[in-house]
Image (tube, rainbow, N blue to C red):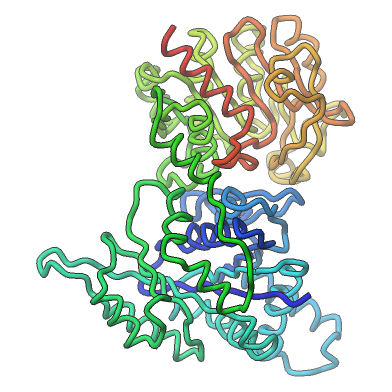
Length: 540
């Protein structure tokens, strides 16, 4: 089976939306009954983004097989049905690490290791391996053309045209066409310069997608076509819009998918975008509105909670409810108190690491529990929900997590390494990061008489994890006797996966990350029910 490759590069400036554009193009091709996957090449030297600051890089998206990847893989899974894996994202750091490991092992038989061919060969090998068994492999190159970090990737994708044949490779370049208010016109020169830079790397784009604040008029389209040496029908206008879910239809309306199929000499049915039309109808015709507060510590950059934000919106779509999301710094709650929470119809506390802002989150949980406000806790949000309950309901005031106080007397939460063992005190240095990170998709058994069993309508579910601390099983009987229900456990019964408070209208928290499996076409059961509960609370 011969794969067809589409390489997507970006120019002029970063943050033009290559990830969303790539995902949208893949969605349109998938709607033509083509089997599509996407690979993201990241130019940073980190081996993966698992240890990167969310305020700098955004969220860490976790795949089913436990890879900690770039947030763009979340976009991919929200737009297409193909599930991403560790084969769908790799970095400069990962490539160099593997090549150096092979060199130390003697695999190159004493050869001098160079960027060409050793690094570029490793990149091509990753692309080919990740794209096996698919009709189309879309490959997004991170960063912009001209970045020194991206040069090995650009050289590798240039070579791909020689290796697999020009008839099986297409280059798509995404650029900015700025609108100058004072001159009242769009400027194509940045696009021309960006294409010239790409040409200097030996790559002639076949398609140019132009980001701009307004539609690209024919005159500018003709100019880009002439100076950049691409057919006019391959110059695509991608104006600013109010919803990313309109982009598949915008791409299809300009017949880019037909142009691509003609380029690769494929005969397929026209794109069936009815599912996306349903999403757009749900989004444009809400029957109500709710205010949801995300209480976090990385609120400076909303992308740090990208999947959570999108999952809340998806829950709103399936209820025909518009979701107004407020990102609230938990440290601000520590300073200003609960007045920051008073206009919320529901509260969500997402995952996170470290002690900063914890007291503010505990205040928010107590407020939601006592005032019967719908609450959804994710990962750290579940651990803190149990901690708040055991402190303020059970009455064990000194209870804590070893993540925040390594030598605490009553550990409610501790490292996975120590789980189910009699807790022994360790020094701060010993305790810092020695736990084993739990990553990827795991099965969870739901209690038959629980609310979550009704929500999922299933006995066993599979959800993705990213954590290194878990709940101490020794405290479970005590908290259950006070009304906190353990409604889901791991398949081996050793780990707490979901909790709920029985005398609360909607108080659910989970150790896993349900947001990673939500998409606009189907939503996710927990988020759909959470938004429904928020709307009921608002009207109560």
